[in-house]
Length: 408
Image (cartoon, rainbow, N blue to C red; front, side, top):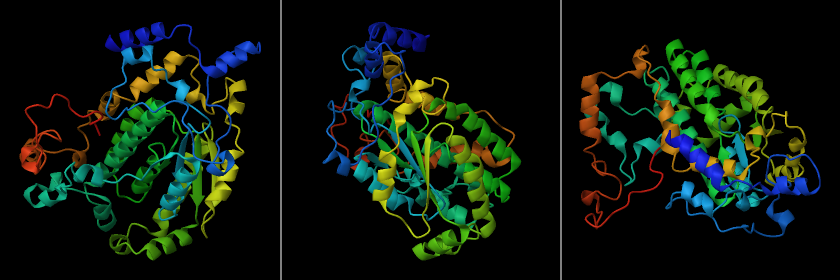
């Protein structure tokens, strides 16, 4: 009921307000179309300098954006040609991090690095919760990418991949929140839309059970439809033998000792990327693929990006490309901004899928009690961040606010 009231109120206060592109078409007697960010993406070289925001960014990390804010602070007024979501994909050790950083710098976008389990196992005070493993029962111990590389058939491998999807999902919401509140585009390494290729590869290699795969797919089905798909996906392609050479060259100890990155595993990963993910995402987003065997030049990719006309899809309302980003009313942009802002905890709750038929994803009541007693008595875990006197927090008696966006 609250959600219905919120949507109705947002549309009431925005009645008569249309997005800039719709107004322009109305003035030229054209059919009204949904607003989409204008023009092509442009780099610093084309612009002749850094991006100049049309409006000051909204301080979304410290201040909530609610229905009441929609009266005075509209959303689309901050958008420009670079207000886009770009996802960088590719096989393991393909050079995504270096490229994504350079791309974000040239396009003056916000860079979001690849997620890992440190986001769960290292708390706000820098304490590594993996130190607690000796005190925990086996079903409650940490299991991260290092553990997966060394023991991929462990029962906790299923939980590991579900957590990776959850972290990518959470980060993608943060990226959308950033765009809606600042107008600045974002560049991400991988995304929740491509995460399934790792799950399917693990299943094909026998690291996941059929039941765990079923749970993952049910969670994904329950959550992925809530997100807006990216505007552009860039895939850095390397053949399997080149990937193995790159893995060896970067000399990460647990990767060198791992049996995971076999030719069969990497070929399955490549096939799933190319035959399923890239094929599907090309129906919704622009797709650029590069042979990155010997590396490449970011400047060349930027020039290709600048040639893409993102407005071409507005003329055909039935075209699936960019359809997620066609909101005809300003009120719909404001609703989306609220959804990906302080309503993030509601979106994360969609991960709570009640499945009790997969043993490796369950904990006994006794194990859960031990985990809770140990975990929430660790340094910095007794209270919310900022309220732990044992970690040096002060002024506890006078604090009246809790942090914004504390959900995973």
